[in-house]
Image (spheres, helix red, strand yellow):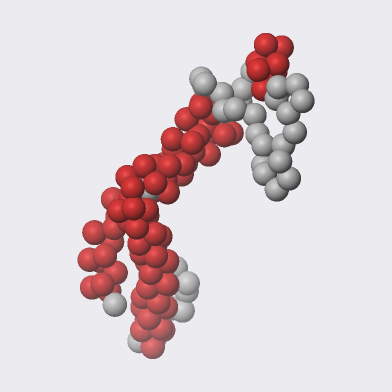
Length: 129
């Protein structure tokens, strides 16, 4: 299992790092503090007179054209792989599955090392030097 864990981490490490960075950037853009909108910006976000959102639809104001929030959609498309088409989406899904594999196999490897250490009579601590 250790061999698989190491080889797959070399292969998927760059993809997982890319997904982590774009995910952080998409959240940064959402959480970045913004100035209060001006009256003109608020008026531009209002629907035209007489417009009624169809039932079952989610009607939203248009996305801002500048500032960090304008990048949210772009970062989301990079994060999900949609920006690179079906291959990018597939790589994103496979990288997510690889991350689950790394978490499970890493825990399994740790428990095996811990059991081996306690079997040899070494101190039974969760963390060792």
